[in-house]
Image (tube, rainbow, N blue to C red; front, side, top):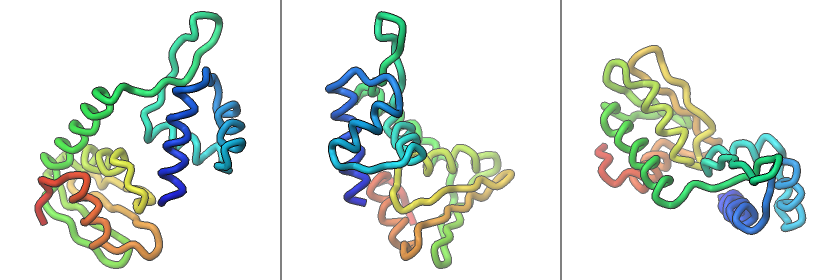
Amino acid sequence: MKERLARLKAVRKLIKTYRIGSQEALLGHLQQEGHPVTQATLSRDLKLLKVGKISDGRNGYVYTLPSDEERQETERTYIHDFLRGYISIEWSGNMVVIKTYSGHSDSVALAVDNLGLDDVLGTVAGKDNTVFVCLREGVTGEDFLACMKESIPELED
């Protein structure tokens, strides 16, 4: 987890410092800073950080980070969607089941995915009212719930 946080911090710093127009260039900068990373992992990191591209004023585009205000607003939206949609959270081993109100499984799964919890491998939204969350090996449902409460203090058991 510390590696990922350090890498995300490095990505933010590099995008703020340099005019980076491609993942290949960003990968090169990260490797120079001692963060060996695959293109797939970098793509996930960029998505998590909500990195976009803007015109460089010439013939190309460069990466840009959302403002703190934009990032906080997006996070508040995901938290609101989660709180509005979930009914209960239960688990067995490294599998978590989130029961949702009818029609809310997609928005609850999207919220969990976008909260950027390192312990979550991925989510699968059921057709209507269930979300399955697969956790990394060794991570328990209790750990997941603790992380969720850290991100969403209003969350009730």
